[in-house]
Length: 374
Image 1 (cartoon, rainbow, N blue to C red):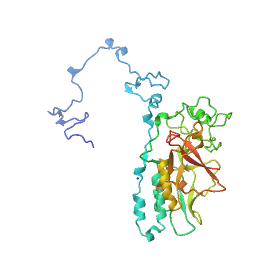
Image 2 (cartoon, rainbow, N blue to C red):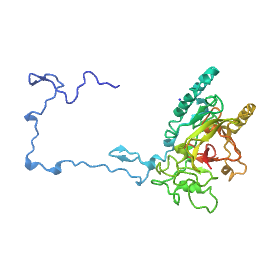
Image 3 (cartoon, helix red, strand yellow):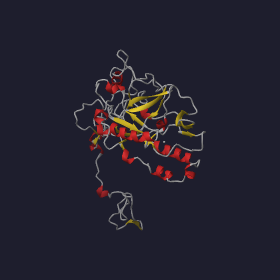
Image 4 (cartoon, rainbow, N blue to C red):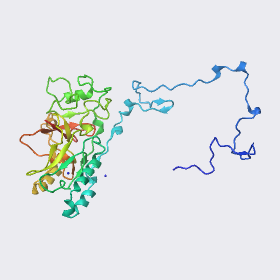
């Protein structure tokens, strides 16, 4: 902007050996049927169907069963019950990406090439392939990123960053705290008018006093209540994937273009199709570092006139703590996505808002900025 094989002397239960029509002397050979003396004859008048043990079907465990802490079973085997499963935060741990592990071998190899090779038009295809590879898990259905330059011959933005939608934690930034995860018990899709949905209540706590219960998204997943922090449903919630309160976590769904501008370097533009108002575009990704580290890096970035630092200073974090101060910063210099090319505008058509979902469970630590059309 990473046999088991069977022993030679084993024999199937259905294997038999014959020699001239008689059973062989092989001790492993089995007769096709028992001899008359081996039959256990039961007279008809002594045989009763009730003497046969009747098979019983195990009773499936229910989520409504009494949760005493005892493990439930199904047919004598341990059963996985949702209400028990979700009680353990370890079941919802996401992979933590550490800043020290940011890949850079491709970037190092290309930066080690001659200028003639770096300016080859095929470099654009290499960057596009790297983008697809690095985002296949979190936005596999998203339209391809477009890279365009009608200003000069530079085929791509500088190879100075690893394209990624993830937050890469510095060693002194702790991973998300799953124990603080708030989740709902809704079945199917969450009802934005529900009085029992934990996610509706959590979102409503940040609306203006007197505002009705609701989510910030409409039924099409578009932002309808801008200006508020966003609290999405998460993996521990019982609602399904079609819940309207799952947007950021599903990734980008629209086409965007990274293009060279005459006076402002590389910027971000809409793709070939118009993007409706309120549509989610992407997250501001990069290294998650402390505010102190951000201050030091900022001094270096200022020497060459570019900076990709974004403080996590959401206004709602100051709501109950007037002495609250910034603790963390996102730095998109070494890792980031298309949002690192956003430019300030006096007439903006997009805005960044804080969003919290499964990936970022603690609003004081890992809430992220999400970009929406305005």
